[in-house]
Each structure stands twice: as structure tokens, then as C-alpha cells.
Image (cartoon, rainbow, N blue to C red; front, side, top):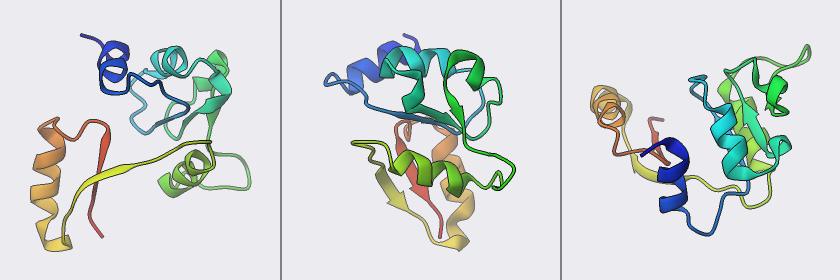
Length: 111
């Protein structure tokens, strides 16, 4: 099952916007999910504009991931589900949890 099918199964009501943090070539899939390329933002795939999506950097901004989150948060209906918060001394455990794949669609936070 591909990304589009997995997300549609997890969010049958649809997806209003998408934020790409991976740069793993998923922009076309995100556009297919959202339906409007202007509601897709990437902080790491600089080919996104070729598909009508946006890249969250410009001459006046940094490539800091927080910029992408700020733009995504401005999209109608954007939410993040935080699965668990880790203390800084638990960073290795947070990394292992993220690598396990069970956090797909959720955010693991290390303050």
C-alpha cells in the first residue's frame, strides 16, 4: 500500500493541506491527496514548484524547519498529533521510536 492509500485509510474525511519535511519525492502524492498544489508546502524538496506546490524558503527566510511549520499552521484545518514528548536525555529513544515507523502522521517532540 502506497503513501496515498495509507493516508486515505487513516484520514477518510480527506486532507486539507500537507507539509513535506522529508524531501523524499512525495510532492506528487501530497498534491493528489490534497487536491490543490497550493496547499502543499515543502521545506526540503526544491522541485516542489514544478508541481505547483510551495517551498518554504526565500531570500528573506532561513531553511529552519520552524518556518515550514509556521506556514503549514496557517493552512485551514492543519493539526499535528503529538504521540509522545521526550526529555532531551531521551533523544536516542525518540530517534528509535521515529525509526520504527509507528509515528507516521504523528510528531515526536524532543524539547
